[in-house]
Image 1 (cartoon, rainbow over the protein chains, first blue to last red):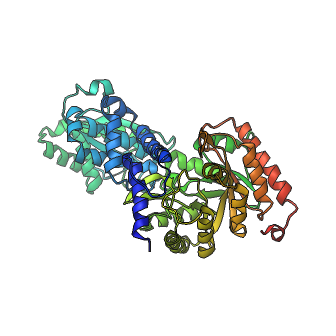
Image 2 (tube, each protein chain N blue to C red):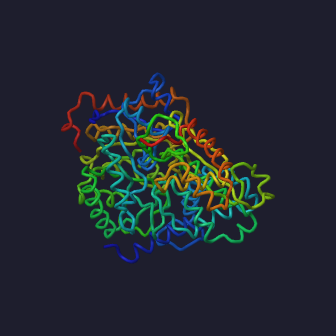
Image 3 (cartoon, helix red, strand yellow):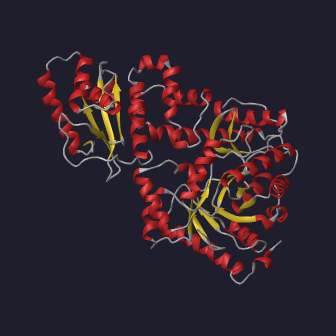
Length: 248
Length: 283
């Protein structure tokens, strides 16, 4: 069993590396401790900057301070450094009300950027068995599993970071997927109706028409003919991109 | 997958992929990678890794095991690690004799463990657990460090005690010996002589960067310098043939230049090991 003083020494060095506040450390050469802080912190900052290049441009004042606060006070949980930046999203949501007030699209932008990283890197998921024919409104369907939907309050998926500060809140949706052939992540701006339709169809075994009706009811849409023809068009578009398939 | 004793490999960086697959400018005997950078990765990079693994044996050198941490081992991570090592038929898995997690927070870099007997006992116990879970021996590296922390014994005694008491294997990082000897004013050859050299299963070689007149940082960002080659030669005279790795993580040069370093290591290893039997080199 480790002695208390051994644990305390390890904890003191670790804490210093996280917060950079000078500390007494038994038997240490104090002039060399800053190298540990620098090396550790550089790794973390590089990982965050790589994951969030657009957010860096959006948060014109305070990005570096945010990184410092995050690493100082958050307990990074993931053993894989490339997964660590995801933890910034929850940290900001729970602890950074002041920064969010200044940069209201911050959370959406972090989620959007992380989605691209994750989709590009995520484990391969097998495409479920499916039929060959294009799905019609009466068909049940299966979806490409390497695809994710984001419901957003700010249009971070279609706005330059320099213009985001003036963006108005609303309801936006972005569909992202990893192309099987190229491995590239692609995005599509979609309406809230289509986003709701995809949420319904991915969670319940309904036909395209039934899922559309449920989404329409949720949004209070009454013109059945209008959304039906648009939905068929949307499904055709997804089918062309090999994101939706008729069930077997 | 078996790997030849005395094989010379290179640390795999993604930027090297095309050159490694082409095999014209650089042709190592194996490649080493950090499993943390590849576990649960799919898409483009999974395909590329599989191509590399089809062409070269893969050795793994971990970053996040944190064998010296006061925190509990991460059993979920070790299970994932085992699955990865099995998937790529990895014949040798090494890690660092350091800690990278403390107070339930990952630090993503290597911190020096207090050189103390209680730390030895703690780590020996953890090595046994990890070896049982991975169903393979653990090979631990002597790490570079810039200051001792709460030390009660020498570095060489600390490393030796852990290797001897746990039965784990030793990754002798020759550059780290050089860096530590410089930073802490000891004789690198005496340090090597003090290690349980029969347990050496792997060697690392790398470049470094002098940041102050009295301090070298182990950057893996420069070519190996002549004194480190000389120390490597000294080490190979005293060890049985083992795989040797060239680490280059930053400032990647032209692949031909890197291959030149591989060839120099290959020449030294061959001169010491090619006509040797394992028994003749035991220290």
